[in-house]
Length: 561
Image (cartoon, rainbow, N blue to C red; front, side):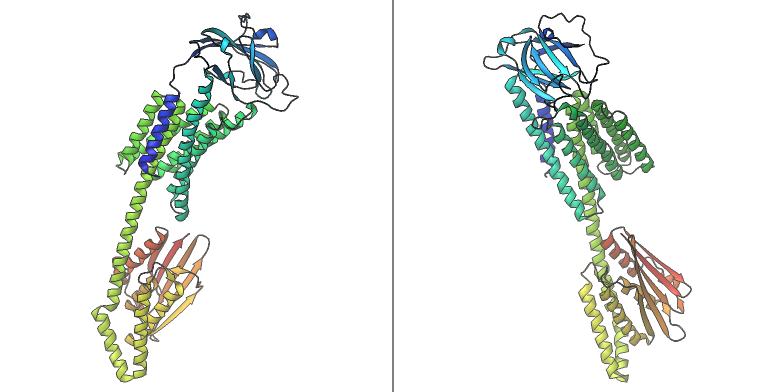
C-alpha cells in the first residue's frame, strides 16, 4: 500500500471519528436513581423518587429492580422525524418513557427460567407526542442474573431515530475500511516474512497490524453482531488480550530498531507489568486500555528517545510521531486518540521498516559487487601470467618426456577451467561439483609439483549445496603454503557434519610444514573471497576459523540454521 495513501486513510478516519462525536446534543441527562423491588407505578412520570438511592448494593442475582432518570429534551423534534433512544445496559429490561412502555429487551425477572434474550446495545423509538422540549422521565425495569453488581446505565443517547442508525453505519463503514487497510498490510508483510524467515521485524510489524485490525473489527462489529450482556465480559477480555499484544509488540519492535543497554531484562519487567494490569483489572476495560496504552507510549518514548540521542536513522521522526499522538490524546477522547495514535505509530513503524529494508538491499547489493569483484580476482589469480607460465613449462616437460601424460595434463587443465566457467556466476553449487573441482586441481598440481596429493572425505551428503570455490580456495592455500611429508605426499581431508542447529565443513591439511605467517593472512584474496561468499549465501549465520595443528592446518566452516 502507498505510504501517503495509508497516512491519508488514518487522518480521514480520525477526522470522521471527531466529527461523529462533536454534534450538539438534543438532551440533558440527570442523575439516575435505583430501587430494588417491582411496582408498575414506578414507571409513572410523576412518581416521587426522592428516597431512591444513587446505587444498589447487595442485590440478589436475577432480582428485579427499577431505575429512573430525569431527562431534559432541549428542542422539539422536526416533523416526521421522531427521536430515538439508544442504551447500553447490563441486564434484560423493559423501557418506559413518561410512564409509557416503548420497548422491551429480554425477559426481566424470568432470566433463570428462559434462555438469554435481548442485546447489550439497543435502540428504541420515542413517541412523537412524548418528545416535546421539556422534562421527561426514563424508567427501566431490569433484572441482572449474570452480573448483579453492574446496575449502571453505561450509555444513554437520544437523537433523531434515523440518525442513530445512519451515523453509526457511516462511522462503522470507515472504521471497517481502516481495519481492512491494516489487514492488507498485515498479510503483505506476512508474505514478505515467509519469503525471508530471518526478517523478524517484518513479522512483528505484521502481527501488530493484524492485532489493530482485530481490535478495530471487534469494537465496531456491535452494530451487526447481536450480543447478550452475559457475553460482554468475554468480549472485553478479548479486547484486552489484543491490547496486551499491541502494547508489548510495539515497544519490542522499537527495541529491535533502536537497541539499548539491558534490553532483555527491561522488556521482561515491562511484560510483567502489562500482564499484572491485564490479570488484576481484566474486567475493567477502561482502566486496562488506558493503563496499557500509556505504558506502551511511555516505554516506546524512552526507547525512541535513546535512539534519537544516538542519532539512529528514523528515530527523530518517530519521536515526533509519538509526541503528536500525545497531543491527540489530550485534545480528543480516548477512543479517538487510541485509533489515531495506533495508526500513526504503525505508520512510523512502517517508515522504520522501509529504512531497514533499504539498508539491507544496499548491503546485499554491496555484497554482490564485492562477491563479483572477488570472483574476478580469483579467476584472474588462476589465469595470471606466472600461473600460466609455470603450468605451460610443466606441460612442455611432460609432453617431451611422456606425451600421453602431457595429454592428460592438458585435459585436466581444460576441465578445471570448464568447471570454473560453469560455477562462477552461481551462488550455490552441489557439494559434488565442488569436490570434483578440487580433485581436478589436485590432478593439475601433481603434474606441476610432482607431489602426490591425496584427497579423502567423510560424511559428505551429495544433496548439500555450498558456495562455489570456497573449498577450492582452502585447497589451494594448503598446496601453496605446505611442504610434503617424507613419502612426498600431502593429504587433504574434508569432513561434513550436521544436526538441527548447524552444518559444518572441516577441511584438514596433513603436511610436514606450514608457513603460518602466510597461511593465516586475513587480508588475503582467498580468505576475503570465502567470507564474502558465505555472507552472500547465509547472511550472518556462519562462522569461519583457520588454525595450525600438529599435523598441518585445520579450517572449519560453520553454517547455522
